[in-house]
Length: 350
Ligand code: 2E4
Ligand code: SF4
Image (cartoon, rainbow, N blue to C red; front, side, top):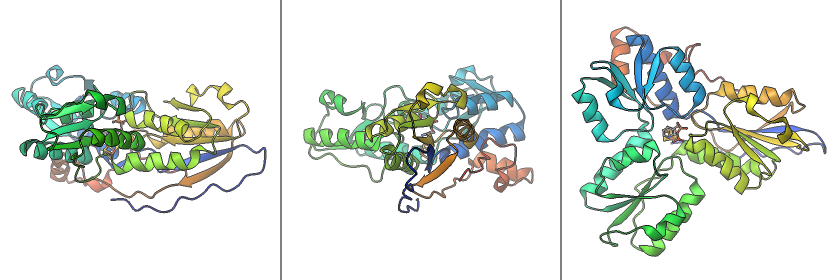
């Protein structure tokens, strides 16, 4: 799925000089790009308002920008007027949500990331074979709610290593684990280790559920962290993968670490005595926000910016069928998805 290249090690720096290590990959993943462009194209095709169930992705800037263009974000399907268009967020929904939408005659566009859908399918398959499924994830997170909804009687949530002692299954010989896509890789491996201690016959998922984007962003942070006096992660508080990046940075040796939505949230005090600042961003974060952080740092003497490249990414998902069909009907191409006005028109710093 991804082509992984060896990390580019940061070059040595003159003693006393200030520098920024800029992680790559960072920011938008293929699933977020697809979800954000889906809302933009729905606004273009059908005109505002376009309703979106939950935040399309967990990013304040994305949500407020789309709101200004005519998207209306709701918590539940029953807040959408009968017959209107509703987009389901990238985090996925339980089957019951599709049924609710059908009952209200809503036009639905499903922006669930295909890699989340893959986990849903795994859940359906193992439930069909009557397994007990141990779903590792964060309680209450939308993705976990959606996946659990595929087979509620077969799925037990395991919220981290310390939750393992509470887990009970019907038949310890027929147990499989699955996971949320945006977890800490290391913590999940520890949860699995403890689960396997308890249930030696525990089966692994057919392929990694923690997605390529989550893994690559954590890998880049791990490669930089020990050299950083401060790690700034751009991302929102409710963005699981962004929060994980701060944790990973601190666990791997960064002396300090903070999550910010915008550059103006950076406390100048964080920079006291700091020589090396690491910068990265979560999978739901537009590149423009990283550019603002890099500019903020440059204004304060951190103009020397060095990329730390842990992997190359080139994955791109096609837009949902409904959008592709309607673009085609209007003679528009989904290949034109990154026009100048798009939130997904990330551009690149390095
Ligand atoms: C869908 C699945 O899951 P998280 O809170 O990290 O979501 P966010 O919207 O920040 O990131 C994109 C995404 C969407 C990740 N996985
Ligand atoms: Fe999909 Fe991974 Fe991006 Fe989530 S982080 S939207 S699972 S590609």
